[in-house]
Structures are given as structure tokens and as C-alpha cells.
Amino acid sequence: MSNNTINKLMIQMKKLLDVAVKHGILKENPCQQLKKLPVKKKKMDYWTPTEFQEFMTLFTPEEYPFQLFFKVAYLTGMRMERTFKTDVGRY
Image (tube, rainbow, N blue to C red; front, side, top):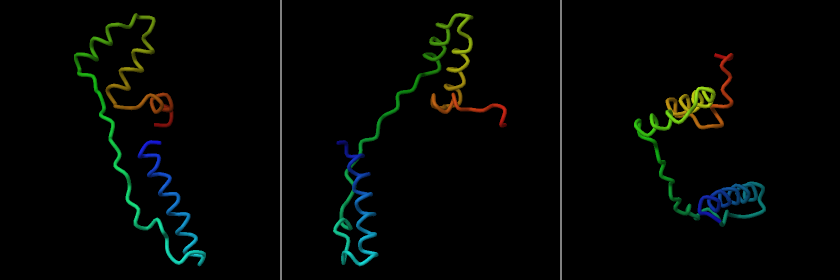
């Protein structure tokens, strides 16, 4: 298990035991003194404008919808799932 997963489980356990203390089942929460494990943050790898322009040249005219999708995602920083879910008619 990753440290992040363990941290999430510890939070749930602490909350569960807090309820037990609240209802008088336990005198104190044994998880009170637990500290989170260190979590390494993933380093994001971004395209430079030059790399992106090179990528854009790979599309054929028939692939314009895909080119547009990637251009919107790159210029706005949206993730793929969010770009797909955008409802243009709502705005």
C-alpha cells in the first residue's frame, strides 16, 4: 500500500474511534497521536510551446476535432475528463 492510501485509512480509523469516544465506548482515541506518513508528490511534466506546436503539426485535416480537443486542453490546462464533460450550452 502507498503512504497516501495508509494515510486515508488512518483518517477513517481515527474518525471511527472518535465516534466510539463520543458514545462512551472508549475513554480516549488511541489513534490521536498518529501522524501522517510522508507522501511524495508527483512531478508534472509539461510540454513547452515548441513541443506542443510540433505535436499540432501531426494532425491531418480530417482529424481537426481531435486537434481542437488537444488545443483546448493545452491552452486551458483542463484534464481530459473535464474537457469531455464541458457543456458549452450552459455558459
